[in-house]
Length: 356
Image (cartoon, rainbow, N blue to C red):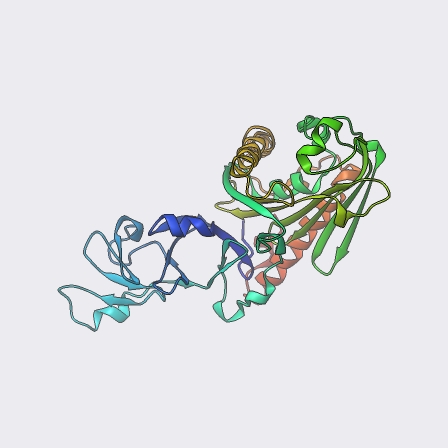
């Protein structure tokens, strides 16, 4: 299955590169090595020494270079070989390796797997809540899913499954009281959910910083999808007669990156506009999110993938399409179009991407 290459993928949570000198991760079937330079910028190069093909991540950082642990060849963040011990200087040019544009933004590392000349950081989707430290307290994490990345997007864009797979999250509310509308803006898909009669237990209102004891409130759970699998979910609830700016907001980021055709990296983040500075609350939310993804959503996606085998095109299996699938199907069609256009530009036979 071809991957869309001329697009920004999330390669790591930014704190990973603060904690580790070298971070290696397979993205779109390519093993990438990431590290910070002395000025704080991120370098990303192929994690493969061209001499004996061992991972450079088995070596060590030396300043702004990585030294191969086998024969000592050193590479900088551009992929250039800057030292080849015991060999003539002319050998360096022959030993260069692939480098990838990488940008740190919104507390994550974005990587461009395609033509470097086309990499424009302005095309990275916006996640303002991850930078608004005054308004939101955030946590972020990572989960590994044994399923195709588009299956995870399907799950996140289907807002009806929450009441069955995660019944405790919206206990007391009914999906039949909500309004769901899907729209497309360019290549962005929105699945808008208005929760007209959302239930908030009176005992929990002080926990969210809400006064009074009204349990029936207004709410929303709008999901925004951008290729290849970058989602923003804007969740909020507020008392009737007020507006969203006076309510509780818990924006989330769901950033999905294919490792291989059938395995995925799932980077996630959650913000809140209440109980700022409460570290125990931040840890609890992170643990809850990780548990939900890895014990509820993840197993469902992995079960789908096991049934599909090595296939990655869910629609080719002729599933029953329900109303709640509209956003996911729209996103898949956008991905299919983008992959075909990229294949045509690179003169890849279209038959190679029809399975996508």
